[in-house]
Image (cartoon, rainbow, N blue to C red; front, side, top):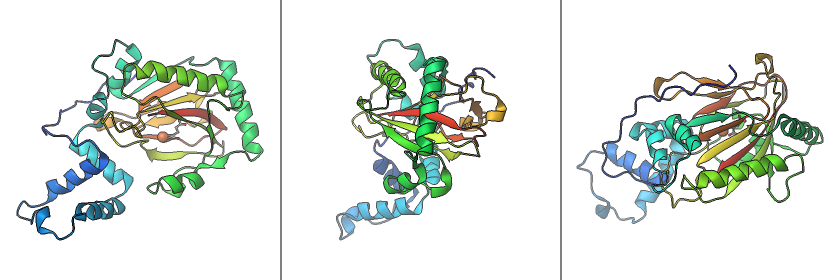
Length: 291
Ligand SMILES: O=C(O)CCC(=O)C(=O)O
Ligand SMILES: [Fe+2]
């Protein structure tokens, strides 16, 4: 399959709630309240003014990321949540239409094959020189949810002003894309850029989501869009492995995206569950998380 056709949008049922809490903590707390019998004492009956916060922290400790996502998804389809990030006054943009239709979109030829190849060669040199860090060691510090065994790629953050020359054209294209998308989607204009290498001996990343569903345009710390530029090979075959599996939403089938050189995959960070299938040849990608 050269370019995957987006799957039909699953039936979406709008939420019946007149009030949709915006922040994650509001949404978690509203889930808790929904489960409580109505004859419990009110907050005013409790002696501790910060009791809600204490309960919330304990609740967060107890549930896994997957369980939390399942609860939020049950509350409202995350694609509907994300659609509220579209600027009301925005002009037309077909790429954004497609993105909000099914949650992801594939663009081939985002960068030239040679640009992709040069980035891949340089990344693998850096990897072999020990200049990249196993991602599992980093993630534990800033993301207590994440399981150390969930992924075995090695990464390096890229800064647009100081990215090694081999990656500069890809980062520049991603920044250009960010400017375009920012005209139509509420974002704060910042992005995190990451170079990732998955070794061809089975490098993988288990099913996960990059952000919680969130539609608050003032919450500027949220990842809104994941944009991944693959570096090849352009002659990818199943023997190379490393497909990005998009888990079908609401019973839709999974879609495997081949990480062909120069290809861009865009998806809504709070909507799409995804997984890197075991790589059978070394696999390099540059990802931007646009906020
Ligand atoms: O490289 C990919 O295809 C996806 C990587 C990923 O899911 C992540 O870094 O969060
Ligand atoms: Fe991811």
